[in-house]
Amino acid sequence: MTTHPVFCSGRVRPVLCLAAVLGLAVVPAQPQTAPAQSAPADSKPARSPYDLQVHVPLVAEDVVVLDRDNQPVHGLKASDLTVIEDGKPVTLRTFEEHSAVTAQQTAAAPKLPKLGPNIFTNFTPAPVNSSLNILLLDALNTPMKDQAYVRQQMLKYLKTLPPGMRMAIFGLSSRLYILQGFTSDPEVLKAAIDSKRGTIRGSHLMDDPVSGGPVDQMSDFVADAMGNDPNAAAVVANMQQFEAETQTFQTTLRMQYTLEAMNQLARYLSGLPGRKNLIWFSGSFPLNIMPDGSLPNPFGAMANYADDVRGTTDLLARSQVAVYPVDARGLFTNPAMSASQSGKNFARNPQAFAASDAKFFQQTAAEHGTMDVMAEDTGGKAFYNTNGLKEAVEKAVSFGSNYYTFSYTPPNRKWNGGYRKIEIKPNHEGWRLYYRKGYFADDPDVEKHGQRVLPVSAMQSAMLRGGPNPTQLMFDVQVVPNDATVDKVSEGGKPDPKLMKPPYRSYSLDYLLDIRNVRMTANSDGAYQGSIEFVALVYNAEGERVNIAGSTMDITLRPDRYAQALTHGLRFSQRIEAPAKGEYFLRIGVHDLTSDRVGAIEIPVSSLKSKQAMVQAASTGAPAKQ
Image (cartoon, rainbow, N blue to C red; front, side, top):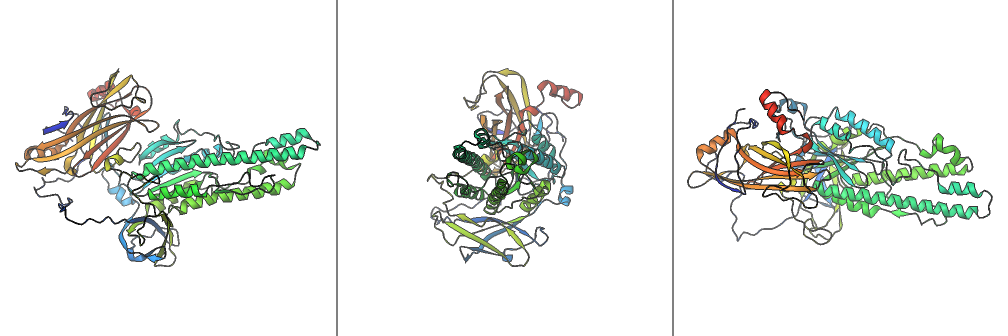
């Protein structure tokens, strides 16, 4: 629609520039009359300093309820479930159902307006699903051939991605990295899987990074070389001990890298509200490596990772993350039995055939046990022994999109670190429930090292790299890049001196904010007052903040100007610099400081058209080219 600039009286920190009309479009909504001078409906009454305030901790829990046909059960009430903690029934304080977006809701949703060159909006045309879904492509624990199959299956799944389904894609090698932030656009997700950063790679901590099978052991070469030497048996046994301990060391490193990535992901996701479904494609690792009686020192290569895994699953559960591990290897047999391996491995020693088979089944069961533990401790479900990876994702997303959230006051209010067991009983036969089976009673406000945990604000959550775009405040922004580079950042910018190196490219950000959800209060003169924060961050491809620009606009609008702003929106301009070379992302946010409502957009710098291309497109009406 046609828009006009709205000028406001007031004070801006540090700069306010009202740009010329750029033709931005605020998404249409129902008209809203100017608010009365009374306090808004959602405001809280003033509290007397003598009021007694009691902090009551609550336990929050998600539960998925399925019927006999594995279909979600809808319409339950709190009375349909009995919740027990450490043997004591509890009374639910809250109970809420969350359901996947239906086809009817999608069809009734408004369409995305046509935007001009370099104009972006946080408006979402499809209804937004309440849960967030994360695909974790694990190159650290998965052979290359299976990674290729996972990508093929995921591209197939994305062709049928439900509208409004918000999904992000992460990768794991020796560290965690983001391939694509949360989006409901399947084409963007496909591009992320096919991107250079998503390239299939071999794990440097697997014996055979291509097939996942065993490699030729040095002990076999030693045995061949020594022949009938009387010392051969002892030398070969020592070599086998060394190889077993080396393999355990590699597995330990894979476990440590994996759990550290999971911990990092849990901390990141803890800043995002609601349930998060982590769909983890992996070959996994065992919880335990048992003693091997065939070695000179049977206990030398053993290991136990259960405590490490429990710590990670506790952090994931506290961050409201349900893990859905999917064995990327699908249905598979012992790789040692392949034609290329079995002849030379078992011709000299037929007894080794049975030993290898037994070891394979033991290790596979242990790896699947790890998947089961991580799923059960977080309220998810593990999928293995199936080649239907696409179907596994569909089930995981369905499970995680249809669930109930409830909270209760724990019977034992002592935060002593002990484990509290949770049991949920359905008041109906034939239902199956998926939920976390307990939690560690650590003080929710204190880290393990005794430090207080600072709460994550709404704006901090909104400005996370790759996070979903919050829409409490709706706005459009046009990003105009300067053609020439500069050697200095704009006044008010806060660059990281280690990450921000010249030359820079400067970007002009021209906002158009729909203020109908901004809380404005009328003063004694009848003017409307509010305070809005505009923030832009530059992230590099590693998710590190490179530069920050922020301004706060204190607004005072006369009634006629306020009515005009309600109709046409409020404009604001800002400038920020990013390094001219490299891969960078702009995270742009708006924050109503009075109501704490937020809105945000993330824009890859590489997607921006040049200033010259924008001018050409504006004059001809043709799409802008790079």
